[in-house]
Image (tube, rainbow, N blue to C red; front, side):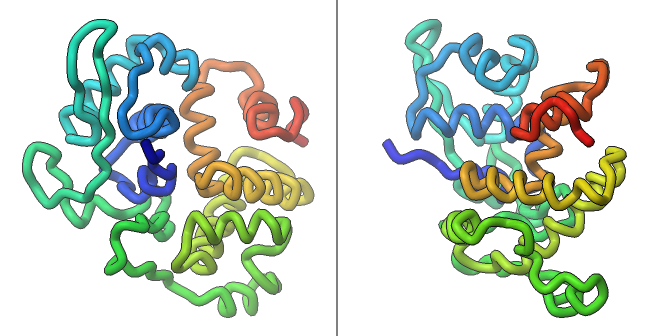
Length: 228
């Protein structure tokens, strides 16, 4: 069975919480019809088993997943088709980004258009950035464009803006922003999840009670344990 791209899940925007997106991405990794136990999903996502159980229940109520069978024979099926009502409750206004940035495009929705407040050239004129892709390896840019066949430049511009703002909020030095942006861009090409959403998912998974969250975050995205 063909797998759903993470971008299809992120295209649902504010309709899903960060935890719901994380669990949905974990389920999508198995293909269209899914058989893992909830314990295996908890191990894969780093979430508590109770959280996984509650999240799957929530995704079922929203119509994102359907279940068949019981017990060990339980099978999940992802349904990411945009719905304008019914039991899922999805509306067109749900299809927006929780970050304020343009959403990742769903390849199944050719009528959807990406909008942005300013073109990349305007941002470049203000901040001296030649391209929002600056710092990301050209090969990774090519992979990202495969994930986002339309509106990639505008999406990258918006992602760069909110991601650098978030890095500053986390207390990461400006001199280290390029290194973080480069690594997040590399992962974007690998898994199809935009940089800001990567940070949001990782921070959600880490929680607020962990000592030195920044070092843990840096380690998880592949920058080593030292954030600075």
